[in-house]
Length: 379
Image (cartoon, rainbow, N blue to C red; front, side, top):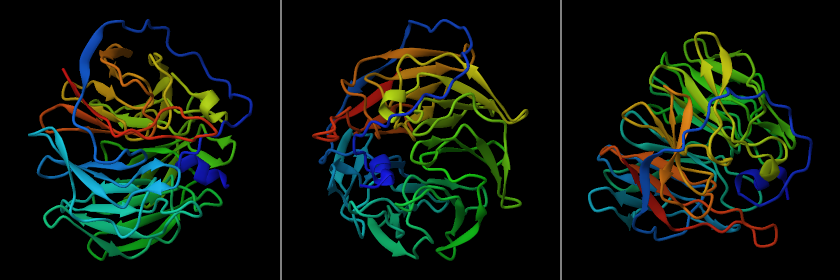
């Protein structure tokens, strides 16, 4: 079975290689105080991991696709209502099953869904749009490549940047733009590196920072680059302090970017507690204090809280919060019980955060088994 499928569709395989050397983080003691609490809420109708979760304009959250285990994928969706803290099945279904896809909220309130796996052979190039007003999915033009492990980011001009990923055989450096007016994809150039499992975040000035990722099996990157939508070009930044993929990143209130977790080329055996901060003024990454837990397979599991702190809810058996004023990570009260790989975290309008699905460590024999559990974080 190909490496890319193992990467995105979650087959539990440990890769063996030497760990890349990493610089020591800032010597700041991790706070042992407790910040907020996670509590279990209603269960999903299906156990899901590698799904997407998107906040709708009406404040509800739609959970799309994902997998219960290898080979058991979903075309269904369900909607979380924060008024009742309950899930209901969406009436509409996607045109195909999808695992490891992206879902991007467009400026008109609809959601663009791209790529992912519908079977265990190759990822899909197809795309569709979800309309919450009609609770329906409508197919649109295909992307130019089969895509999984890619990133998707809504730009300030209303277009969606689709970057990197895998076509099921090799990593991709091609970049496409989706135009929601014409509902078409256009290839506009290439990144400086192919990137599978990279992390993308939009900077305050509208540019997009892409960090890390894998070129192909065992070749993990410490490099980063910035996409400028005004010129449709990429510019390299200084490298991160370690190689990372299957990590996460989030923009802080002051415009800097927190990059954390992930793994080196040892995959399960190379998970990181480390974190670093990117400053767009200097284009440099600076190590910060370690997290309380090693975390990977965590893209999209952090949200910026109203007080400027960052809630991190994936990849570990508990959650934690990063304070950019002190550069420390603080545990929350409550436990997940499993590490929640490929879960989702969504910030609700009422300032709580919804944590959905994911799977535990699994075994090479049984593979990953997802959960139908969900939790709420609140102060």
